Image (cartoon, rainbow, N blue to C red; front, side):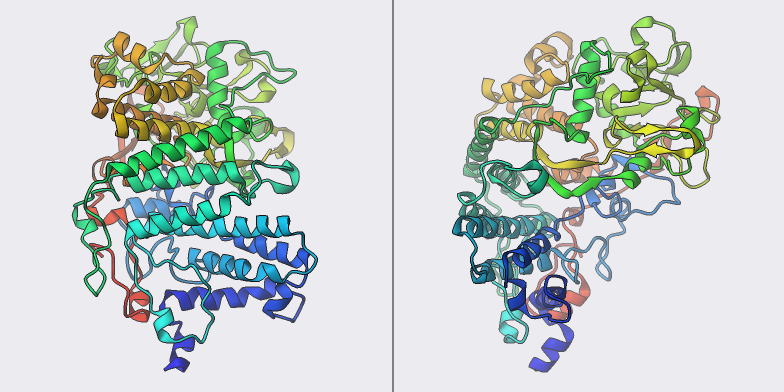
Length: 634
């Protein structure tokens, strides 16, 4: 029987154990794949620690990160494939699960196994300072907890793998069962807490340690985990998805709501914020560099919003920059419009195919800082009316003497800072002034309209957030793309998590509102209470828990748009069945006439059902592990 186990990888732990053993050759001398050599010296041990980090999910790739295209924020034409897009379209399956992080040699379980090996073996390294050994061990311990968290987000209840199990162990050690989600959350938090005191308080050497976890990052992730644990998907969920049990009848979801979970989340958020602010973290506010002359407050708000995500130098907002999460040439050129000037018109490297959906365009607030369908002064019923823009007040955000729709006028700074649209303006550092910014015309025949049969913007909306404003383009297709590292979590995210937790604990308190207002102030908007009182048809919305909850959800959608947060937020809020069943819409980019171009096109009509809150476990895994049970609906 044991021979069959080792041959066919019985159970999930055997998969990762076997995978980890095969990886030793990456970190030991040539032709000596022996574990002891991986920890024979400090240099080799650090390489193995890098192996632990390399299991981090790919957060930047549109085809590797389900959250980029799986929430209907980004869309492509039918010639561009994406696993995240296919998940939204209902193509997830049990035979060959999309973006499967459970089975195989690239799974998160393999990363956990590598961490366990490192934790068990780092003490063997000779002549290594105790403080450094403890710090590296703490980093691997945190990563182990983080990988459990990433698995939990995808699969719900999972096994807990706290120790490495060598190949050849008894079947009982490999055939593991899933643990209740409350137990998994408790394990994750306990493991993070165990690592916390040995981590550096902050980044010590940015050049040498960019991406390595420190205490600020760990506290921020701990806060996020506890907010997730307190959210409706895991806290008092009584829907069908929470009915699964192990084969022995053990219930895997606690269907009783606990207010204490929100209290724990609020406390963790407060602790993380205090650590971040004491460590010099603050909301990023753009300052004009030498050679750039921009002083308009709205423009500063636009660039602050855009560069909080895409600027690494002097960025005080990022709490954890994972160094492999690089937004490089390939990613940036997939978002950037091609043809805004003569130098980019013929540059085929600029592919422009990652497009923002009009669904997201509608989410941004009016210039008054409230939803456009709530603003009593916004012409919501005429939002698709084609108008000729002549008023000079629009000159820096919309091309004058050009036709566009009202939807593009009188919007908040984050809209103009992050969205490229037909007749919009696109500022790059080389433009030097707002007047020198590029104009973008997406209609057929326009400078950034369709110019390639495969790679083109399909909705008529681009995302500026993924394009470094320091990029330059010259003649003969020459270009300089400035890569950047996208933050895994940033301070604005943490502020809004704290506001959410406070509201769930005590309702719409002044403290909860104040943390929303911090984010809004950076965006150039009035505070919540003032804006709703003056401009909204629902002036009392911020005064109720339900009302403020909606405002917080809207703020997270806008502030963190396209960063891969909404995909998970909609799941933990249990809003997926509504929000992820809405048609994905945009403009008709094959038209030149504005009245035809602005006809709303439906690109897909998804249907998100109860089972889609979690990934399926593959049929192969269920066959290998007789104790494993499937998620609901699969």
